[in-house]
Image: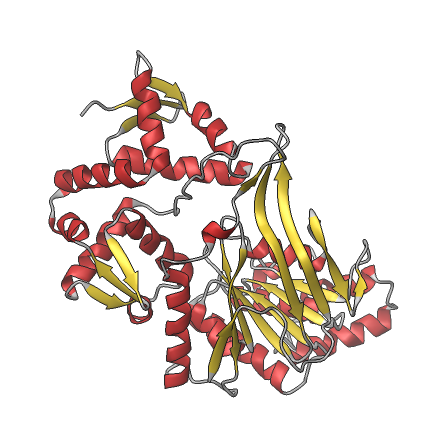
Length: 445
């Protein structure tokens, strides 16, 4: 069974290893305001737990993890290690990254020994420890190989071994299996879980950032779902299904469906904290709708599938049939909901009359329907269209719009938002875009 709650501490539990109290991240602006990336969050990591952090792309999962590990400074709140504040001193943690991050000029065993050497462990001792952990992760016999000789799965095993060789109390993993093929990822998940359940590693807790709902359900004792804009704890699930878990079991399917319902619920909590905070006397500016980073082509395919299925589908079953994970499916769902082509209800996607018309139309009619929906429901595109219309030559530089977005988002997110808006606007024939000059020109209807 599983239960959902909004508390970040569990009853009748031991002292947390790591605790975040009102931890937040924001970027100050020249006018005295700030862009809020992560709202104040309370979060505790307890011994004996695997915690999975879920959320849509760009919601702040990796940023939160980096603050918990000391890789990125917080701008508010504190991190505590066994009840003591962490002030510049790194706690006993290790991180496994998505990109493997191996030293190509070192052999497998030298890569694993590297963190021990950095800690001043004598050569004989670090060699023995590296051999033991390589054997545990199934890499004995490859000690003298170089990373270029290894498959993706074997490279990630080296990354896991390197993280575990320092005997971390908490192991952090940032989407560790997302760069691997499905079968290799499944194998590594099983091996990691076996090491954990059989107490073959000294780690007392694991914290896994993922966008794969089924991965979280199969591995985690606790699943935290982040909302976005700014990041905040949207839901907190305690998972009491015993290991090993059958992802096809009724309990696992029910939990996956519950998480999908949370992630697609129209009454989500994104509005609870504004993305930009102003000082006393400074008037708040209007909230910008954050665009999902999708292309219109994927939207059309999704709506066509819904028409074929009678207009309503279970999102969990759809993602399973299409072999799509959260990172791939939810942005397209969000786009369809934003444009009023879909609505979500209890984890199902339901096509609207406008969505049905779009799916059934020819290419030019689709563009006209998309244009009408975009200008009606996407404030950024409406603002861009109005600004271009106000110019006598109907042309503006993309930098003009980037400056507007910088009022609400970080520099990186501003770029991504503008790139998405340009894709949508060109598809809808709202404007033309010259990538060489960076100029946008209004397309007259």
